[in-house]
Image (tube, rainbow, N blue to C red; front, side, top):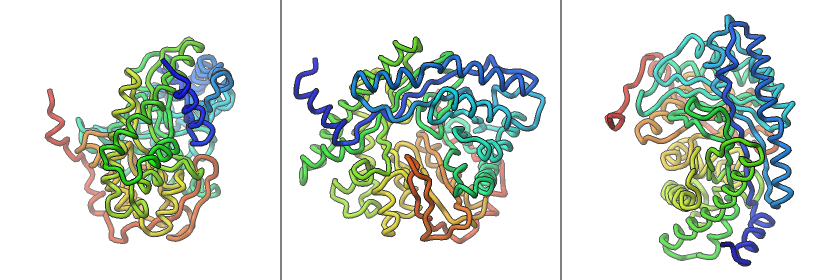
Length: 452
């Protein structure tokens, strides 16, 4: 039962503390769109999406207006296209990418995800075709997002895929150089990817999902930051409890929106993803939460411990508020999308190595990081391998979204605008990883994968 205090508190969170529903994402199965003719397949894909998601944006806007809750993004995720297009007699999946982009435009959504492949244990011919199509697909579309899962705790790390993705990132940056390598901002390389992730750029509709589902991603770094201001100097027990209670309130709001959207769209409710996903706006930063705990600057010693506690407390509060918490759920640390992270990187307190350490305990991984444009493909691949190893050994989702900024050097900055923000170009190690990456093969699954 909500009382007057709860209602006023939530209103204040929305008006003054950047509380919002970051996204409502409709997942759509495209398995029945398969066809040997790629043009026919693309037509089926467009038709099914535009029918299923016809009212997604309209319903989202209605809920926003009626409940007074901002829903920042409306998005669509689809079955990994490497599965959908496997029957097509072609080597180029760009026509399907364009059909997805056109469907996103017709439906009025912000992004569409699922130009994806799952290659943690090896490639099918379709997987190879999809990966080869990624640079062109992202260069010729506006709303499309792509992801490739190269590792899992059960399968180990597909190092052939890691090498291939390092090369793909470089080629994508080159083909989108006129926009600062924007294509790379819409490309994620995963370990242990989840099937119900509502957040871009890594969303896809897994084969274990229903025909259609509605997922909600909630965000509230500003709310958590504000809550912690009431317990300055208090022991960490109090800090953790404060974060848990705040996460509970945030998730309850997400649950309300998810259930309402599900009912109005006639689509099953999937999950609420409680992720503290920041924006470039001042007051909406995960880095500032960590600093509020007592760190002078995010990135200094103690940052990993602070982030670990934040992530754990967020999850504990969230699971008490909803029976269906899923997706990624935790704290995101994208450099370009977080005002505090940007400041910390510019000050020199936050470097790539420290970010890698933080990914051991955060929600995802190395996210929206700009590196010099001349960074070798094998160095990017080695960064992907390191991050995949963290995910595989710790049985958690990790990911890399990295931008080798064309023509940029350390100290420069690239501007993407909107939620993607701006990123200072960060240094990478100058020593080569080429011989390591060139070995190929598969790094075996760890002992903790044997759970049957």
